[in-house]
Length: 448
Image (cartoon, rainbow, N blue to C red; front, side):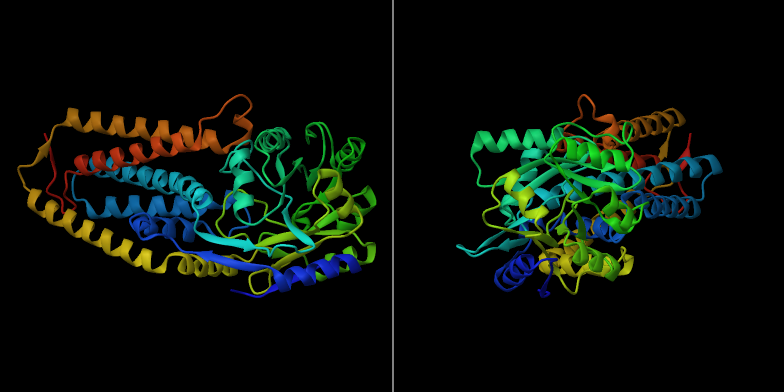
């Protein structure tokens, strides 16, 4: 595994960071063999989805893939033009549904599964590990607040802040869960204020929305509520770091996921002795990239706040995995490839062999069924197309509903339910497509 580095802004923070880099171990768990049929799909979805600075960029490769598949189907079929166009359109929509739903399914599985990396902190250390920036299903995360707490506990964190977008609801749910279960983890209630500049607001009592506050006002309101303010991924900020310091932020994310703040940000934090945090910006993952190191006595939200305000904290991260100043698409892509290989190389190989055999069996079956007399009535063709489009619309609506935070004001369907609906819809749609294409790419399909 890559070596651990640290960053801190005070002597106490330096001591904590150095100790953590020396003492914290990393434990890898590989994907079980029974996971083999799913593993190639996990690799495919991860590789076409990784490296981008924002999830909105995923629409580009997904749409290009759908267009490519649609074009190939249209090009290889030799029937009348409207039949070719319809079959190609449904193939493209099916491809888009497969990778779009697959993104949600893979991220959910990555989060709930037990493979990947966990921090191992020896007993009787003078520090604990924290992640103070997380998202749950109350915004655009893949785990419920309760599951998010358990994920962090299983991965070696003892302190976690639930910071859903513009709402404290997820944090309140998580805090109640920990109080009921007496879990050995400290939960901070907070939110990520997603205005022109994103802020992690910790230990606040009520929502602070960009509809009601601009960035300076949000900082003042968080302080009025007794909270502390951390500038999230400041390299994406619409305001300068100097402005944020002037407005009263208590610290900065010096590491967010696999991005490390540049020398200017590091120098400012050290000069002002501001808190420097390593946060995951967690939505779903199986390899925690960074952590904030806190004194062991920081075991309540109030004590965590005191440690941050006094700069008694440090960020630890993997030296070889971070890019400086902004997201690096290629580095992110190769980093994901490296982690995928480490967690499931053998299982993935078995998975590819499995699907190769399935494909070979399907091609044999297809050749056996290929028959000039094998025709499909126009009525059935239209019926199958309408069913396929209806299934696409239904499952796509559920997928959007679960991931769009603005649609979650009252209720949203549980992710396992959505993934089950998506799986059935994908399977049915590809079977329907197989039927309307009539098992024939060579042009012998006929319509009555």
